[in-house]
Length: 596
Image (cartoon, rainbow, N blue to C red; front, side):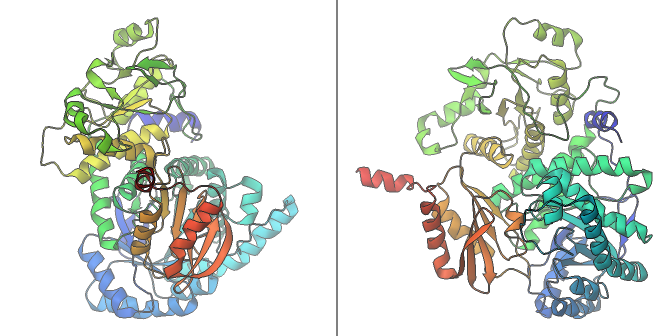
């Protein structure tokens, strides 16, 4: 698929055609629906707990269940876990999650229906070494990898076991890092290296994933992967597994997942999804199901087939649309200014008396007096009229327009002069239902506004799908934060629990939030084990990583600086580390008390 063909599809939903891969009795890709997955948080050596949790997930709509197998001993116990699940009459396919240990993968492939390997660490020890590889040395590395990977491919082929080649941002091999950098392009090449080995053995029962905690990186990586697969040929149409890794918990985790996964679903990309929350695994399922439903609802609105306009953004390389700066109600909008938050006059009046209580969630522009212009981008006269304005103007889509939000704003950005700042809406219908499920509101807003922000489109946002003024503002700001557009609070990268986790992730994440939640712009990673840290912390400023049972290692960037700290001391030590590096400020309440 060349770029022109690829970009044309982003005005009109067309699900990417992939081959079917069977996992147990569940089909991925082909004509199958998009499947929902999750992962056990139970210790893999605790057979009873793992069986119980897998059965609960299966009963609640989880179609594929993953379980960690960090050593050969853990992988061997999958025999008993799978037997217990099948004895209970449950046929949900089981997936073994493998990092670093080819021998564990070989053992796991005896018992499960699918094996997930990470090409960044399957045959490589992560050393963060800087070295140059000649073409000959690089080729030797590929031969070495093939020797390690071939036995697993042959076993999976013999037993009819599927595979996921799952690349994670930040956990690329030193070989890939030194040639391609820690980039979406490097993520794609890392996966293709392993896919070529599998194809050379005539094994095709695999799927790809390109996970990252940063939605922009994730979206770019998947788009590059699709483009690369099309360039390789029509028989490279393997299914894709979608997920934002280390999304976190609460609203933040749901919003970040919705932006990354939802954006790609609207592009027609994705055959199975996993929402990774730092919560009980059962809580991931309704979020994934609701996300699929809201994406399907957007698709059902219809599209813009046959539009001649090129896209107003590069789908493979994020750049913000360069509008001109203008003053609106005394606030700069466009022209490199931060993306602003707009609110209706009715909602502003409802919160006007308590603006100080809203903290960072401040309304910035009132809709009705902003001078905003709403046009249908298909209306040639309306578009020409706006483009003849002598000065830049705020432009948006009109309410109740019969267009999907994302496609509509993309077309608007393509047709009006770039100098005009754009105001994004989550919905073209103002919500009048006070009983509407907030999860649906949150997901629709995150998918629509988040997708556009990650395309570089938008100078202000307006939430119309939520009635409550306070929640409206909070949702707007949290979408800006999760998309990396406007950082106004501490940013957390927190992995979901699994059997590798060396401490209570949910409790620990809550304690770290309580101690550091006021550190605007500081990015802290909370990782349950060495598999997810330090590599997958990617660009975090500080890391809190499980090193051994009840012991924590602390990182600055990807460099471990404190080791084997008792867990009951680790949060205090993290705070001390942040202070040591000049990133600490006192919480507002402490500053107020000192001033008094």
